[in-house]
Each structure stands twice: as structure tokens, then as C-alpha cells.
Length: 214
Length: 391
Image (cartoon, rainbow over all chains, first blue to last red; front, top):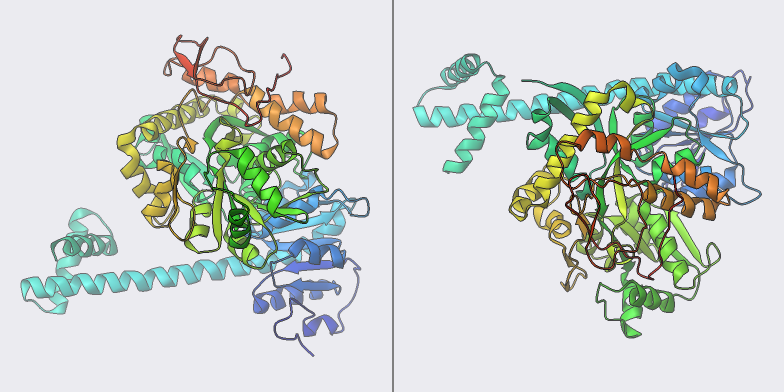
């Protein structure tokens, strides 16, 4: 059994899997991307955490979280709706449990590693740092993986963009000089070497200036 | 030539202009600094990156360092303000439904009177007034509370100020989750362009000289990096002076519009800098002179009285000891460091570190280091005057 399409809240299948349950903390993960959420839940389950709920929709985030009454909320630092969670730290209703951003001054390395990996945790008042640590450790490992994938994707995209610009620059040179593709490429590379610049940068400058003349 | 590297975080907003101009127009290089500007997706993430030391300094909501000093918001690293980056720059908008209702009840959308606009808004609402702001600790929230309670609404019974990230504001308005919003530009103008809001009031109409963004650092950074802190303050002061020249408007707009910064059409970015707004999807235009200011009247000077005003507002609302809050708040605005950095450069540095807020109805000459400071109008819309605690 899996999640129902369109619902903001779902329990991923593997949270029912028999994992060695050693921790009873109630965890909420705020993550709009379901595949990503599943992977994070999986790694938390492997670490012994079974009480995990996922929120995929950012609207009324605070209300949803209050209703679920978790011990820990995990959220991607790149998620702009994170600022909505900050309000929980100043919740003034007598029945509300105070929540704070998890910044453990006794363990700066852990806090720094979490921010580096791009995950932030909100914990209820009074929860001991040593109980938060295994949750964060599991999350950090996953988030680091996503961070790497994100960088690789950006690099791939950039390489593709650059190849397009180089192709356009080659085309311009071929047309202007009446030469073939290999010769145009050689000319471009020579120009780049002479100017001490990257091939893609020289190509981009050429394409941009050509735009002025057309 | 590469200078000393400084990592600076910002949120893509018009009022990040001094940082962008300092970096792009060579003011930082002149001071031997190389600024690496990186955008953040949220204020909390920007604050955390500053707190753990991934950033040297950050574009920050003026109340954030103050809230930290008051123990609010669950952040343990104390922050300070080295300078005020901008005066005002926020705008209040209403959903189109409520805009229509206000018009039907006779409001003229003159865009200049906080009293008229506020009374019209209150008159158009039958239930609790729900207003979206970008962050719980923000001038947006403080000015909205100040404005509406001065007009007789009770907080928190009749006012619900909710945090909604600006990119999500149009959806929240459309879904009827909020009635109105208070945001920094360009978000007000882009909501008009998206056809979901009418602009009601520039926040400068509530408090004419409200400190909006500050340059935030970790407490202690200025002592450990005195030379760099001073250089950064000077670079930002020169950038602000450049921004204040009318001839810079075109280029400043162009720079801000670019991809690493606002990545938005120049004609939308320009509205805040020009102080000329399109307030409805029908194209009604209103002027708001001095909508945002970076330089006039020692705008960059971090007055301890500004911090105290914020501290007392927060303390009153959160039920904290007001006098204690006033003292902790004051200390976060480093007028001492600012004065030391600019002593030989600026001619209009105030000789005092605190002033009576809200008392200047017309531009007023006051005592300064070089004897040439004219304080611009700083009135609150209701004529209240704020006397700071003597240091």
C-alpha cells in the first residue's frame, strides 16, 4: 500500500516494513519531491526510526505540523517555505510545544555538517541533543547524496549549454570565413589559448557580439 | 587584482542594491575587498549560514539581530548590525476582492495616507484581518502591528500576521488564506503583474524613516576583523551614495535585473527605485517619493534608538521585560564601529548614537562630526514620538 495521489500526507510503503525499531521519536519530513522523500524515509527507517510522516504541500504547513505533534521536523534548507516553520518557535498558545531550530552549540560539527548538506531540523523544547543526533546523522548522509546529485546535474546542464554556444560560434566562423567545421574549431581554440581564456567564454563573447551586428 | 575575499549572503530583493552595487561597480575593490555574493532561498537559511560561519556578513531584516538578543526565535549565535542597508522599501497590498470592496466603500487608493488606507481596510473586513509577511521577525510584521493597533484593532484578537514566503504570497491571496500582505519590492509589483493584488500603501507612509535591512555579522566578527569590517562599511557607504544619484538609476536597475540577482524585467525592478508604482492590473499609477532610501540623512547609520524601538515593540508583543529588552536591543546596532569606519570619509556622521524617533516633521539640521547632517522627515503616521532610554 502506498500513498494516495493528491493527498498532502502519506505514509510511504517502507515505513511498514519490519525495521529494528529502537527509537520512538515522531519525525516529520517536509519534502515536495516524493521520490526524494521516500529515499530519506528509507534511510531513517534503516537507522531505526519508524514513526515518520511526510508533508509534501507547503500550504498551511504550520497547521499540519501542529496537528501531527512531532518531536522533530526535517526540511530541506533550499525549500523557501522553511520560513513558515520559524513561526513555530514563537508559538504562544499555552498548549503549543515550543520548537527551536536545532543548533547544538556543544556539537558545532554536527550543526555545520547539517547546513553543509542542506538539511535543517526543528526540535521540540527539551529534546536532548543526543536523541536528535542519530536522526540528523541519517538525514545528513542522504542529503549529502542529493547535494552531489544536484551539483552533477548543474554541471551536466552547464556543459550542454556550453556545447551549444561553441556550436553556434563555430557556425558563425564557418559562415564568415567560408571554412569547414574543424578549421573553425581550431581557430576558436587558438583564440582561446592566445587570450588565456576558456573556449566556452571566447565562444560566448563571439556569439554575443555577433548578436549586436545582426 | 583580487582583494580580501568576503562571503556575503543576500535575498534577491531591490534593497540588496547596496551590496550588489558595491560588488559590481568596484566600490568593494577600491577598498581591497572581493565580495562573493550568494543568494539564499529563505531568511532562516541565510541567518543559519551566517551563524555557523559559512558567510562573513549578510543582508538581513533589521529585527533579526534584535530578536536574537532578546532570546526569541531559538537561535543561539548572537548577531549584530554593522550598518543599515536601506530605509523602508516595503509595500502593503490587498487581494483584488478586498480591493473591490474598499473601492465600493469609497476608498480612493491614494497610496499616501496610512490612516485612510488602514481605516478603509479595517472597514472592508468582517472577521480577523489576516496579513502575510515574509518572516516573523521583520519590519513588515512590526509596521503592520504598529499601523493597525494605532487605528484601534486589537492584537492578537483581530489581527493574524502570518509568515508566507513572498513567492507563495500570490497563491495564498488567491486561495483566500490571507486578506493582505506586506512585502519588499519587487514582490508587491510582481503580484500586481500576476493580477492577484492591488497595492494599498508604501510602508514609508507608516514610519517615514524605518530601518529595513541591515548588514548583519556574528557578534565579535567586527573585533576580530576590524580592518575588513571598516572597509566593508566604507564600500557600502560609497555604493549607497552612487545609488542616491539620479544618473545611476538606469544602470542600477539594469544590474539588479540580472540573473544572479533579481532575474526580473527591468520595468518591474525600476518601480521601487523610481518610487512610481502601478498599483492595479488595470494600470493605475501612483507616486511614492522616497519609497526606498539608501543614503539620505545618514541612512546607513545604525541608530541604537532604531534597535531599541524594535526591541520594545517585540518585548511588548511577546510579553518580555521591556527595559531589559531595550538595553539588549540597543547593543546590537554597532553605531560605534560605523562611526569609526567612516570618520574620515563621510561628512554627515551623527555625533550622537541615539535620537528621538518620529520627531522630525521637516528636514532638520543636527549636530554631526563634520557639521553637515540634515535629518530627513522621520514621522510616524499617528504623530507618536519614541524617546530612547539614555545610554
